[in-house]
Amino acid sequence: MTTTFAQLGVPSQITDALTEKGIVEPFPVQAAAIPDALAGRDVCGKAPTGSGKTLAFGLPILAKVQKARPGRPRALVLAPTRELAEQISKELAPLARSVGRFVFAVYGGVGYGGQISAMRKGVDILVATPGRLEDLIEQGIVDLSDADLVVLDEADRMADMGFMPSVMRLLDQTSTKRQTLLFSATLDGDIAKLSKRYQSNPVRHEAASVETDGLDAVHHFWLVQHHDRTKHTADLISESGKSIVFTRTRRGADRLAKQLGKLGVSAVAMHGGRSQNQRLRALDAFASGKARALIATDVAARGIHVDDVAAVIHFDPAGDHKDYLHRSGRTARAGATGTVVTLVTHEQKRDVLKMQRAIDIDAPLASPDLGLLSGSGHRIEPSPGKRIDERRTSDRRRRTNREPRRHADRQDRPIGESGTQRVYVANLPWKTTDGDLHSMFSRYGVVEGAAVVTNRKTGRSKGFGFVEMPAAHASEAIKALNGSSLGGRDLLVKVARPRN
Ligand code: ADP
Ligand code: MG
Image (cartoon, rainbow, N blue to C red):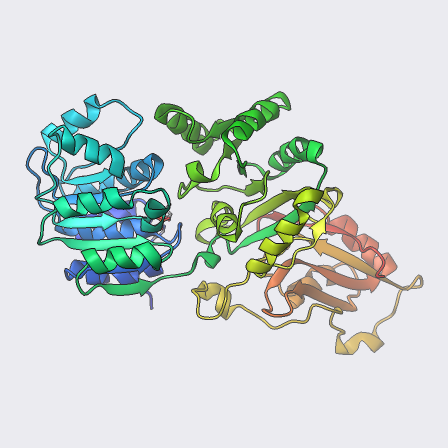
């Protein structure tokens, strides 16, 4: 039995509006935080990007928030970046309408006119980045003393970006009867202090660790020549579709976008050096599919979510494993699959291997010639105690990753004259079992063994496998099955390379 938003206490006008958007089942962080927040408790939530924080705080706020007087918001959401503020307000706007409330975002880098006139009309829920909000307060446009519902979203990021003093000054101006909800990917250091100082008796929820981001992605690492990186990136985008490419620097992002354009791959760059309008335009072009690739720096891409991102390409390897997971989490969201490729030059090898160890990933640095279907990709496994999609847990099977399983009836089967052929099958949906492989191939002859290769430690499928058949039957099967579609994926089926 699954919980519904209504069972968590969310009012029906809001659940109706959610249903219209196809959102019916709460994510874990929502199921955990919403009842407490509705009950008036302070909540301190540890949750990574993509876990559904916006609705976790947004729904209780929408259920509770009073109508504001001009310039005096009743609820305040502080977010680290313009993009996040804009996304939160966009996601909550239709829901707010359903309960007759108005949500608006203010942030720097754009003119004051629109923000001032919105505040004059009255903003019930104000979403803001700290800098611009302080600015508006100084100008006498905003007064926070009626704000009795306050959210700190991505508090760790605000701390990283140096907003802590500003956040504290702002919190000090809000209502003393305030309810405070704090969400962060980490809850130590500055965040612990912030919680201690500004929350009273908070309930603490840890929804999932950041390691579960991009869990269903297959991670590849390609050892490449420095000057070939653009070409590989173009090829990857052409093959995968909608891709986000990360570069280390703003200039690198601009340059790459231009070079990709010359290679016929439409790309837009998004980074902190561009104006707010340019960034929003880039994001829109990418989300709508007008541009196939978004080239971004870490800061600019933090927390943004675009649906159906097929691939994340680390053009420059991530600075550390945290950035790696954040970047990679832009794909394979909400149970979808995705591909993550890191381009690694010889000079970067050591750092990348170190980073791999930090996230417990054991992917070899492969040659790009093998492509995405080479089976060199790896999945990141959730550590014990972390949230694992139920569907996945119940479906998890123990397998070995060595030899294809021998079927008991093998001896009774005729073996082809030219002996047994080993067939390599890649791009399998993760649910595929040994039995599935067996029955798929037995339509074309005698299957002597069939196994999906799995991670030895976790039993999780690596998305490829091997089948052994008499050679004549194998070639029939390869002809029939290569390029065919299974669970929406195009299978790669070919003669396996001889084992060494
Ligand atoms: P976070 O702020 O934790 O990074 P978001 O709140 O932006 O995550 O949510 C990530 C994505 O998941 C958004 O596209 C959002 O619309 C979607 N989403 C959130 N909650 C649900 C839900 N209960 N069911 C389906 N989709 C959801
Ligand atoms: Mg968010």
